[in-house]
Image 1 (cartoon, rainbow, N blue to C red):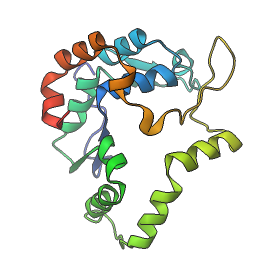
Image 2: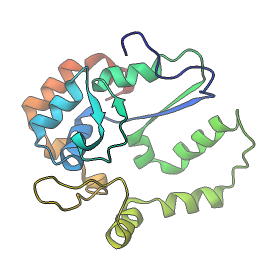
Image 3: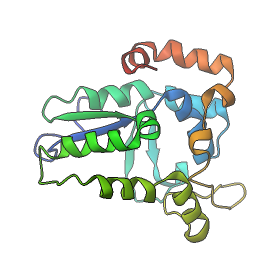
Image 4: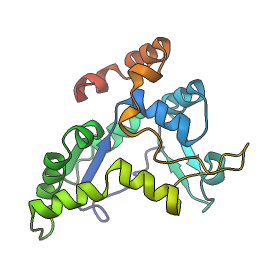
Length: 191
């Protein structure tokens, strides 16, 4: 931000960056922040996008989180030169969780002692399934869910899971704007 790095080699050993198709990010933002689709598209198009505590429904710790637009956020991590980087597509975590998780563990083995046990990997994946986490949220709540300002009720964090499909939820005009604005990075990532 304004030529100031958000991290450096002193406090970054490695980076695992999870990227998600921006068309599904919009529908997720719409639910998470209780915004309509147009407001949510503005969110990912805004090069100066920041999250500032309660403004976006979170707790106010007096700390602003600089996001930038979807493309800038992705490139800010992709272009780090001082630390090893592993980019994971969110869609790969959904489509092939075991192989994707093992690839993350193999990356981490470069920095710490990790024994990869396929049975433990399967248990971790099963215990972190959308259905398990959604049910846990129903019973216990979830710290990262926010309160809708108009209703005063908690917004469900684990909302759609695999049903969050932009092809069914996003109008063609906004989808076209996303493809136009983020064309280079989406092609690079296979979106």
